[in-house]
Image 1 (cartoon, helix red, strand yellow):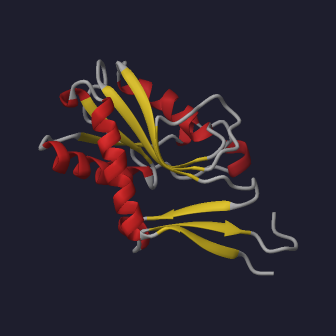
Image 2: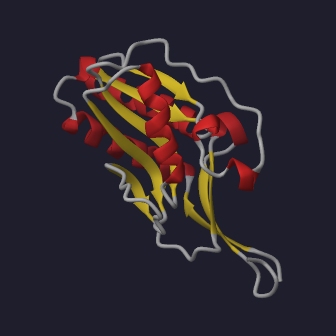
Length: 184
C-alpha cells in the first residue's frame, strides 16, 4: 500500500504559527538587543530568518540570525553515514546573549543535544532556548522545546516533513503514514 500523506499545516497556518512563536519569544526576552536566533541546518535556518522578520515587524528591532551545522556533534554518524556538512555562520559572539535555537521538528531530542554542544563553540550564552515548528514526541533525551508551533502526537514509524518555500518551493507540514504492509 502507498504511504498516506496528511497535510497538518498549510502555508497560511505556518505564517500564523510563526507570528505566534515570534510573539512568545518577544514576551520571554528581557532585552531584545541580546536576542539571537540560530537556525539548525537545514530547515531551521530559513525558519530562524522568518522568525526574525516577524519579530522585526512586531518590535521594529533588527534581530541577529545565524546558521549552525551539527554534523560533527551528532552521536549517530555511524548509523546515518557521513554527510557533507553545511557551513555554520555565526559571525558574532554569543557570550551573554539569549540564544534561541530554531529547528523544524523535534523527535528524539538528539539533534537538539548536538546543537547545544555545537553552539558553545561560539561563546557562553546567558540562556539557550529551543523553538521548533513541530514537536512530535518520542524523546530519548530529557530535552523539551521552550517554544512549539504545534504538538503533533505521532507513531514512531510515521514521518513529519516540513516544506519551506526557500528550499522546497512551497510551505506546508505533512504527516506521512506508511502503507499497511512492509513500510516501517
